[in-house]
Image (tube, rainbow, N blue to C red; front, top):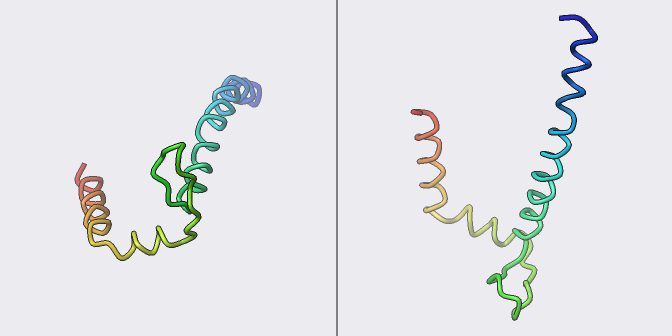
Length: 78
């Protein structure tokens, strides 16, 4: 494969890469931002900042570890 054909492939892939970047990265950043709040999803009650408390509760929850173990199991046996 010569240099010109590689440039052509990259040129055709660039619009899709940019589109995927705009569609995937901002929602991921927003999800991380929301993970620092306690909020029921209602417009009536504002979100309450809880910091890392959600992560501390998650790490201390047995259901989280069981779910993570099952995820690794099914991923590894697939």
